[in-house]
Length: 28
Image (cartoon, rainbow, N blue to C red; front, side):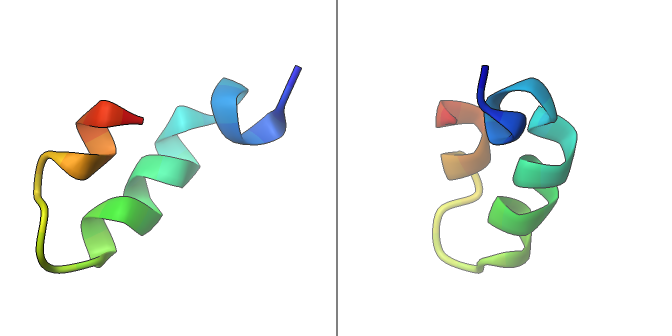
């Protein structure tokens, strides 16, 4: 399994940091 997929929390934190699409982190 992928660490990014398993640890969605860490990945989400990075996506939220990016301004532009607030719903992008939800997509992943």
